[in-house]
Amino acid sequence: MMLVRHALRNISSNIPQVSQGSSVHMKLRSSAKRDALRSTLATYAYNGSFETTNKLKKRKILKVESPSSKLQSKDEEILATPNVNWNEMLLKIREMRATMKAEVDEDGSETFYDTKHPAHVARFHVLISAMLSSQTKDPINAAAMRRLLDNELTVESMIKIKEDKLAQIIYPVSFYRNKAKSIKKVASILKERESEDGICDIPETVENLVALPGVGPKMAYLVMNVAWNKPVGICVDTHVHRICNRLGWVSTWNKKNPKAQDPEKTRKELEAWLPSEHWDSINQLLVGFGQTICHARQPKCKDCALQSICPSASKNLRS
Image 1: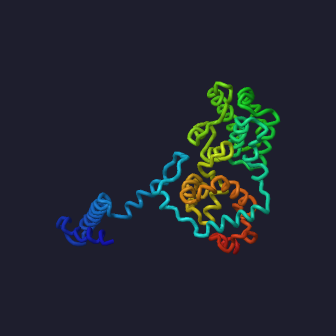
Image 2: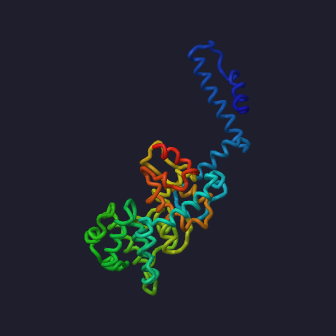
Image 3: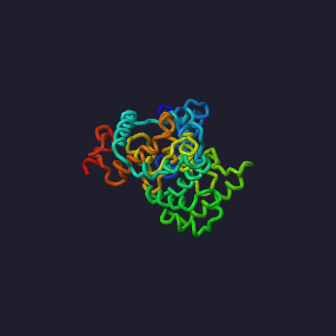
């Protein structure tokens, strides 16, 4: 504020001599204020002594859209302000989840890594399950996967099958025609990259996974964790995004347009402070919690062990 007042004191000397109070005088005065403020703030920002400007520069980091398997930088860690009770909350969620089964436990993509298959085939199954899971409930996705497995699910079989036939098998998953098209394309890409010993394996990095048709960051991080046993990032779906905002672990909820949420912002903010030893389990843990207790609509706060420490509980308990 001292800098702003200093800039404003010098405004009068820069205003041409016109009648006080006239419309011309007021416009010139307003223009001079803006110019003086811009000049002063720019000078101090350039010299690195204007702290607010530096903070704004750091905040821009969270706008990076490209997915990355690398840990967040120190600048991003400064912006992370999780709920002080996060560790207690996490422990209580684990305790609740240990006593209840959720759809994700029975039908999630994690269940389709079957060691009876060769490792590269099991990884392909996880990838296909993740691709089918978008905007589809776990039981519907799992039923589609089981039908595919009954018809043989390999890179070669997906290349041979007709697209219309594949769409019929995976129906009624959401966007089943688009997903059938993407699966066919992915199978062809993997076949082109076949190794000398005839193995068609899926990519081993987030960057290469998201380069595949129909594969987004959420799916890529899930596949890295489940198929490759490499939790290089957190898989954030609608449950994780909603619950982390309710618990005060992140501040990424789009209040102006609730239908236009960005889970990637939640992933970046969550990864900035959540210890990496929790990354491999946090998705299934919170998804199951969302399916059983912390519903999108009418959450069961009265049955939740977090009701005394959750910042969103009081609002839902009153309803």
